[in-house]
Amino acid sequence: MISVSNDDSAVPVSQALFARAKAVSPGGVNSPVRAFRAVGGTPRFMASGSGAFLTDVDGNRYVDLVSSWGPLLLGHAHPEVIAAVNDAVSRGTSFGTPSEPEVLLAEEIVARAPAEQVRLVSSGTEATMSAIRLARGFTGRDLIIKFAGCYHGHVDALLAEAGSGLVTLGLPGTPGVPKEVAATTVVLPYNDRAAVEAAFAEYGDQVACLITEAAAGNMGTVPPLPGFNAFLAQICRKHNALFISDEVMTGFRVSRSGHWGLDGAVEGWKPDLVTFGKVMGGGFPAAAFGGRSDIMDHLAPVGPVYQAGTLSGNPVATTAGLATLRLATADVYAKPDRTAARIGAMASEALAAEGVAHVVQGAGNLFSVFWGVTDTVTDFAGAQAQEAWRYGAFFHAMLDAGVYLPPSAFESWFVSAAFDDQVLNIIAGALPAAAKAAARATPDKPLPNQ
Ligand SMILES: *Cc1c(COP(=O)(O)O)cnc(C)c1O
Image 1: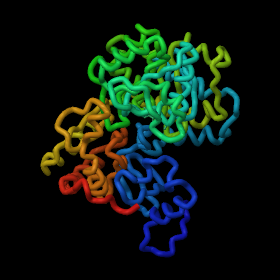
Image 2: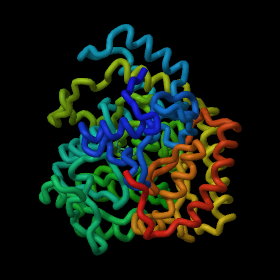
Image 3: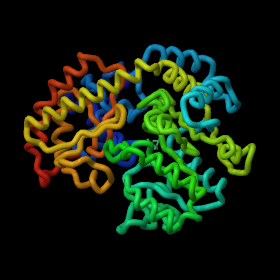
Image 4: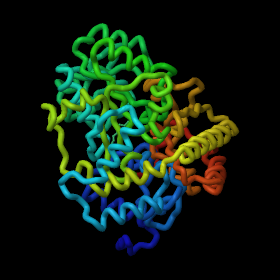
């Protein structure tokens, strides 16, 4: 149990914990968006999760539309996942040697995804970082192409953001990234074929790889236009650059084969390398990168490209991931797809009733609302043009009514297979007041105090 000294019973425990956290951690959090800066107010410290619900340290219960940012496809504390984890933990937490669960998990991934081989790592950031190193080692080239608004973890070269102009060599998106590193990244507008063609025309023989989210989910949900991913695979092949599909968010969430199951598997193309994380760890730190075995053969110990990890393939994490994937049957995938569509439609109806212009966009069971826009959002500039200031008011009204949404307008909403009619009713009950709050919001009103 959590024990918190909290003499003043008027102060919520979350608030007391946040004050203590701020004293010992920058911003009181271990990942920035959790601090509620984009929506104002105090982050809720969670004590437990069960099915579709989170419970905070003050005993408040919330429908969870974050699902740990994607991993919890089955909901919180799925009994069979917990049983598998307990069983694994009782036999030891880490061996620093190969073990059976990592073989089983790799086999499960290879059976589902466009990868002949995979290397397991501990975070999505590590997966994309390693995939890029491998692409550079394999091609002997340095340049990377990425899209503005696509997030691939906090890898130095991938934090570069678009400058002005159609084809720009990236500028660092954060202090701490040497400009020489940022300059190895070309940042282009998402869904813009002409920009991709122009970049390859200019830099083609220097491009090691193009990396893209399989469907962009980190600027809100912005799906690839029909045929866009196939086009990327094709133009990379033409220029002998590797096509890296980042499925850390979509992988094993939007179909049993990730987003590739919705486009590449149908259209008949494969990425050269693919990255996974989130769902495949079942709520534990586990991720992977994989792809063509002739490329993967360049990794140590077979080849010269170095990559390693003390906890890579950890027996508890891989057991949780394997249990999760084995439970993720066709039925399980059908349910979150329906749930996501229902919630999107309910939110849309509530906002329309209050006259709030908006667009709901989805990719499989990922979806999000863009505020104050009337046209489909296809790139980062479009996402940034929304009235994100409406979101704080909406977010807090939902939170007060027991619905936990992502604390930023630029994040996707994540459902789980644990959502049932009772859960949908709670959301339906919360939406009208939240839509009213969004309608009344103004751009100049400061966010509630931190
Ligand atoms: C979450 C995410 C990452 C980073 O994964 P971490 O485990 O947070 O390091 C990379 N790529 C995409 C598409 C993601 O959504």
